[in-house]
Length: 105
Image 1 (cartoon, rainbow, N blue to C red):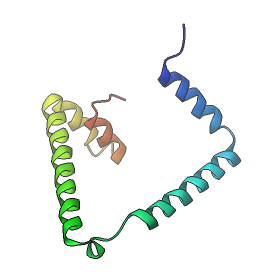
Image 2 (spheres, rainbow, N blue to C red):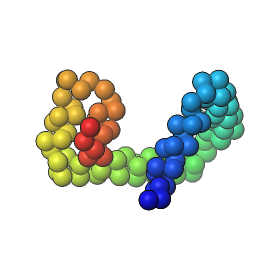
Image 3 (cartoon, one colour):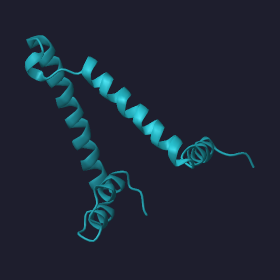
Image 4 (cartoon, rainbow, N blue to C red):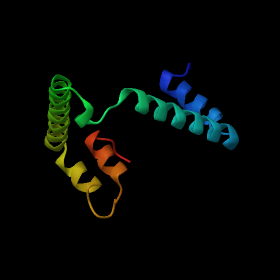
């Protein structure tokens, strides 16, 4: 039986991460790329023109609206899962992310 795309990707990542030195080099390279991108493309709100500020605020409001809608829908679909994942026994933020996606451990 052929592998699904997810299985192929999982195997590839497992092989790639098997060598700790190679993994560390990859992480350093990605971190530097992220820093370069942040320095060149992101500006604080105070440095933006008024029009750009309005656009950024509008995008942020829409993103927050979508996020809260997803949270509300996840709670409505399976409140018992959210209770389990957001309980004190779980204690990690990854549990709440899993609950939002309705994934059972």
